[in-house]
Amino acid sequence: MNCWKACKEGFLLFMKHKKLWFQYYIINIVIAFLGTFTVFTFMNSQFGNTSALQGILAIYDFEIVTDILTNYGSGISVLFHQSFLWTIIFVFITAFLIGGIIKVYVEDHIADYWNHCASYFRKILGLALIFFLLQLGLLFLFLMLFNWLIPGISPDDIVSEVTALNQFKYLSIPYLMLVILISTIHDYSKIFLVNMKASPASIFKSIRKSIKFCCSEFVHVCILIWINLALLIGFIVLYKIIETGFIQDSFSMILLAFMLGQLSIMLRIALKFWNLANISRLCTLSKSSSLHDHT
Image 1 (cartoon, rainbow, N blue to C red):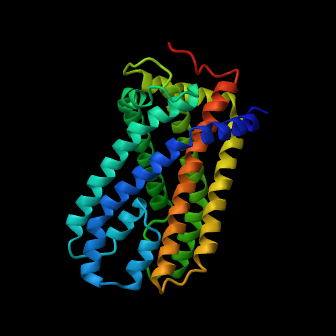
Image 2: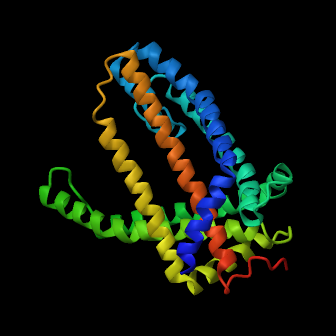
């Protein structure tokens, strides 16, 4: 099957250009350090060298900034604006790099990598904005649906709370499925986007091509999704199991936990890049794909 061949060739492609993965990881860490420095400085001034702060250090990652900001009052406005600024910078840098990375995966050639990064930056960023709005709209739709199904819940009403929890479970399944579907179409759109001539309409054309391809190769696309999800869940579960064994009461244990957290980040980035390589190979192998159609 094309999906299994795509996985094999995608892995070899990912390993061949693994320096792109390492480069992305280093940039992630640099932005994480710069973006969270203000947060850690503020927290240390408020709470000192507490175990809570040490615990956060152990999972040091740019993605936790938002979670940190929601738990502190004094100075929250300054911290929020700092976090927002670095989040925007992170999004722009990611959009800049992804176009070049996908071009390398599609053509299996690293020449003109930085030129490709610059060439596809605006289109990749525009595509990201479109799908961000789609995900935001989907979230709003399900929140409205949840509010419509559970009107007038009282915190003291246990029956209503149970009903709300059940409704949330029922709604979460189709919601997550649609989130995965939109994310999948987004990933395939990136592949098609970097292989078309630059024009304002190419963004929407890539989305149409992505939807058409996902429908025509539905089984193969679904298998790749499940492989990616299974590996991601496996990484998370394994990390949580290992993490529970750490008692962060000494510098050496904190350092070890920190290294474990970084390994987890590296593996998640690796999985993301391997998935892009798999998708690019599936599009190349599929007879229904017009990947190399530059019209």
